Structure formats: structure tokens, C-alpha cells
Image 1: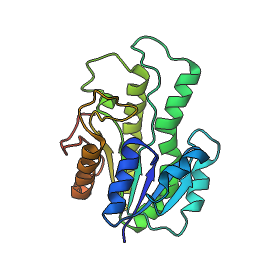
Image 2: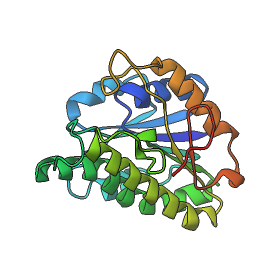
Image 3: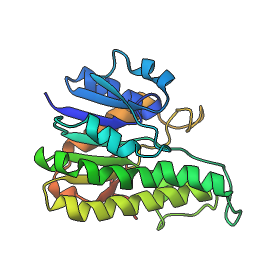
Image 4: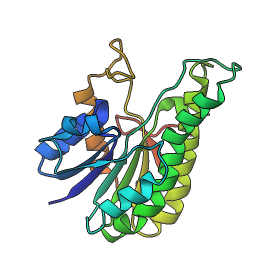
Length: 224
């Protein structure tokens, strides 16, 4: 039975990915931030583990809890949007720290700790990014901080792919589309079920030739 770790599985895209992978016969391990969120994963995941991305030493604690698990797929889904500010309006230090810690530092803390488990399984690592993180296609100054965080996350993924790709791990940055979730809003294009199903098809189809790429929800490559 293949095993999938989803960091940020209590709501939105992460929760739907957990549901679909579990229904397809995968052993799903999902993380939650607050103890009250753990109940949301009951009956959905084989294991529910705490992971408060803003807390100290959360990543080593999660890695210890995962010892002995074979990780065929890791999806780093947790993320926050922050304030909807436009360039050149400066974010507050608190806004910057929250968004960058959650969207960027968390990946930099966890990826090194899971590298061996992924390499042993010749697994796949996917980060849920956003087209807003594409520097080459930026044509709108809104969501300045969020765009910066996703561009930084893309850089983290690309760098990780150079090290982990040599060990047989396929690393991807994925744009899930504009999805009807708490973050995406009710006017978004895609229902969460469709986005998750499409992401799963993309992940299943990729091979080592796709390592280090930034892919759309339909599988097309996005400009960095």
C-alpha cells in the first residue's frame, strides 16, 4: 500500500487530496495545526499528526513521528495568503513573518528531514505553489507578499530538486488553479474536488524527466 504525507490536510485542497488518496487505497498521513483540528481528520487519514508550522521545533517533531514510515509521496500543502496588499505597500513585520514562515521556511525545515525517506522509496515531493509565484508571468501588483512567498517557495523546490533528483526523488511545484476554498473564495473557477483530482493525475503521470518543474493543474509547464 503506497503512503502519502499531506502537510496541511484539515481543509481545502489538502483535505480533498487526503480523501481522494485514501479512497484510492493509499495510506494517508495528514497533519493538523491546532488540537481542535485533529477531529477533522478522523476517518480520513490512517494517522493524524500535529504540525504547527509557526512553532519552534515542529519539523523535527514531525520527522520523529514519521520514523519507520515509507513515504512514496509528500505534499506540502499548508499555506496562508496574508493581507491583500499591492506593491509597493509594505507589509508589517508580523504579516511578513507569518506568511514567509508558513509558505517558505516550513518547506526549508521539513524537506531535509524527509529526504532520506523519500529517496528510499524513490518517492515524489510536491509543493502546492501558485501561478502568482511566477515572476515571468506577473502582470498584477496585488497580493504582493503572497506572490513573493510563492516565488521563494518555487526557488526552494527548484534547489531541492537538484539535490534530491540525484537520489531518485521527483520534485514538483504545482499550481492547483483558482479553487473554491476558504482562501480562493466562492467566485473561484474550480471546485476543490476537480482541482484535487487533476493534481493527482499530474503527480501520477510525472517521472524523473519532470524533476524540478513548475506545473499547472492541467499538467502544462509554467514559467518560473
